[in-house]
Amino acid sequence: DDEGRRLLQTSTTDDGVFIPPECRQFVSATVHIIYAMSDQSTYETRNVLNKPAVERMHTLEEKIKAMPEYEDLCYQGVKYCNGGCMPPNSLIEQFYDNGQLMFEETLTGPNLENVGIYYYTDKTFDAARLSASAIRSDFLFSRPLPGYASADDRVSEQNDKIRKFIEGLHDTLSE
Image (cartoon, rainbow, N blue to C red; front, side, top):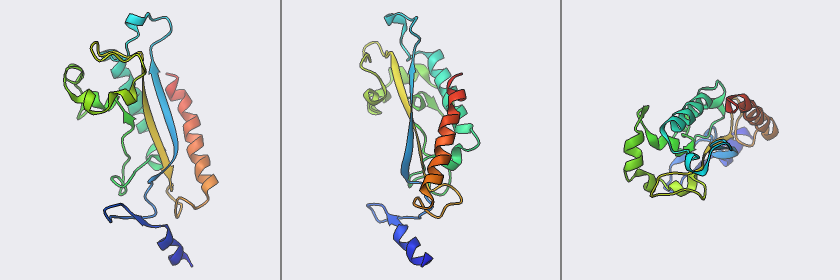
């Protein structure tokens, strides 16, 4: 019966916190955005950790999060189960405090080492110069989507909606 099925689809965290089945906690798709300077740049000028580049990357990430369907598809995890989205897994967020760019403070402070900067940067990252020729951000998408009983309810239909959204990102990312 439906009640038994609902009970089977619920779970708890390691510390016993109940996770309702409608919580989007299972990652279905990931979009990796790689930020790199153009090929016309020389090695010395290829640094993406500069203020104008960080501002542009932040603007792009904010555009993605503001897209109409984003809140219905984003990964929530347990923390945002009652609404909202987990922030993208992005180094760019480390440069902002309450929407304010804190570029110099971030570059000169201890924060970048604490967030595992090597996860986000390419092999050219230079801690002494605070430079990298590429960094990445990850946007996570998950099920169940609104209107579906669980992550297992009409999976291909849910995945198609996520895929269509991701394909629609092309225009935003091409800017």
